[in-house]
Length: 148
Image (tube, rainbow, N blue to C red; front, side):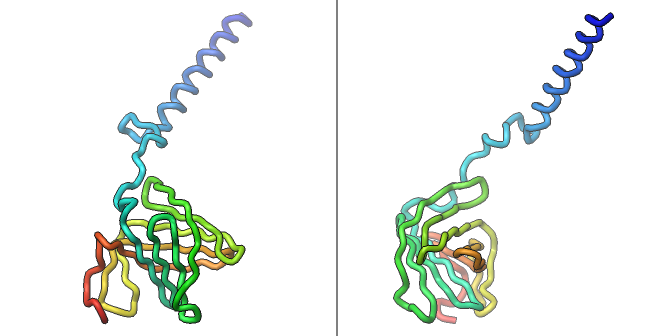
């Protein structure tokens, strides 16, 4: 009886493991890691991000990000790494000794200061500070007036 019991436990464990593995798919038979990386912004596209309250902007060309504020219109250039995730792009680097991480994701965005609509939303984190904003690229412009 102990052998039968052990065999039953083994069978139950095998079924539980098979069920767990099946539950880890998205219904299409693909595992979560099989989702293609975001490719909506080409590596050769220049990205401009901006935010209000406080005002800031970031322009990314290649692996260089230029971060500007009203106190530093010319901005500070830093080297960033680019990561294409499942739902957008990520950029990371260091600004004045603090970690800088920026996420660019598709979605209509308004800067709340103009009648423009931007094709991307942005979350920029510098150290512990988080800034939110909008973005566009040289090949995917905003909609609305050039100078609001």
